Image (cartoon, rainbow, N blue to C red; front, top):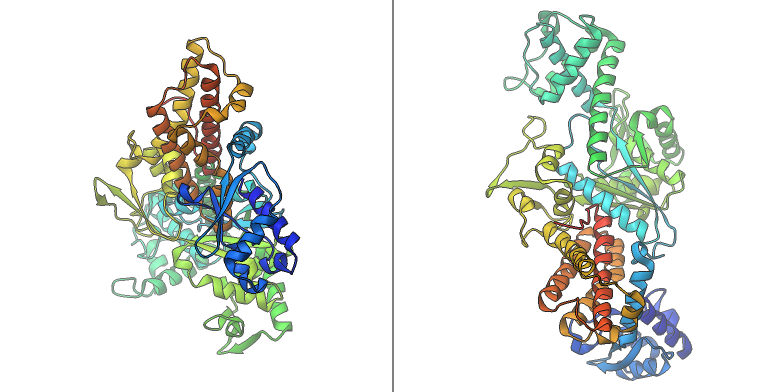
Length: 584
């Protein structure tokens, strides 16, 4: 309905001439739902916005626009309000037509061509494979997977990608943590590094190393520890862990260290893949940082920057002139020791994304990556790519609460709740929807008791129960040997005149708009809020009026409406990755 009104407006502006359509801009002849039904179903401020270009009083221009609107069965009447707003009152036929569209399009209802096939690469989660996914990663997974579904339903061509950070210091720390646990399993006694990974998963990987390698990688504890700098708290834990990594490579050789590293990564990635798959989150590609380096992409990116004079040397390191492209400071791309930085990998990876033909790059990252956007955009711009092609959505932190008490978490110290543990406690559906209840740029308090409750206060239960309630009506109908006549129902929607019916009709037909706004604003939580409103409309209607009345025309009209509501609930829940049960 919204699109039909916008098309009518566009036609009116074009017929008025005088450059009004051009002044409005592409897609700018927009209408919005009215907040108050007394002011119509939709409204637009187009006359106010174009008054200056038309050299006209806004109310006078509004009158000219109304007069130029093509005839349409959608419109019952229009009126001018205030300084020049145009209010649209829709005819009952408009709602009847939209309800018929829900039944006709079924699971495709709400889908659009909004994205016009724009190729989008959506990278999300991309957690370092140094431990199990925790509840924070779960929020990123739920957001990214749902946003991908929403964009795909809105006409974008979406590819889902996980970037595996399998090169660099963090995975070296995982490997040396595993080796120390392996030495303990061999009977050696040595302190565990303060900066190592302490989770039980490291012991499990070490046990596999012990099974595979026997004593081949065993070295005496005194030999391992000889000459190492002091660890924290007496010394520097960063210096100590780096020295221990160097000692490990020295004692078991580069090949031995690589075997420990490879097994550690293999086990962690298998765990992450399984966790996400069970959570209903899929990726089209798992992209390895090691693969990026082996392909020569990093070297090519640096050569491109060098060729264009974007790099300089200082104190033995190679720097990128990031400040020339909007960043707050220049960035090191190659350290004094010749090692390339994470930043060098990041800009090479994003250049490679563009080279694969993706027009828009959307990264979903944790809130601690707030400085990431400017620097990577600077890199893209310096390499001749549009910086605005990169869009970064930062996901704020999650806090778990049980019985009103916050659960402490810290990954390195192994004081964290894994995504798997959370899913096992509250279920996938509650996980997915609770993660999406608030805007991604706001911290989320996750109430475990509420997520498990079967009450109307639990939004998962409330929305799913609305879907199940309609299914129960169908079971009652079958028990009474009644049949739903869709054609008769859709032909008699004019009989749906009660306030509850009108509210349900207005809400259910708003789904395409809710989906469009969620796509444009990258806000899956807005879809959750819409589904709660729709569920409320259904529950209110269900409690107020019987559906299976004697009059077949009224009965089938009401069934057409509630089955339409059920279809939209199912469509919306599907996009969120939440099930739509038939009974509860």
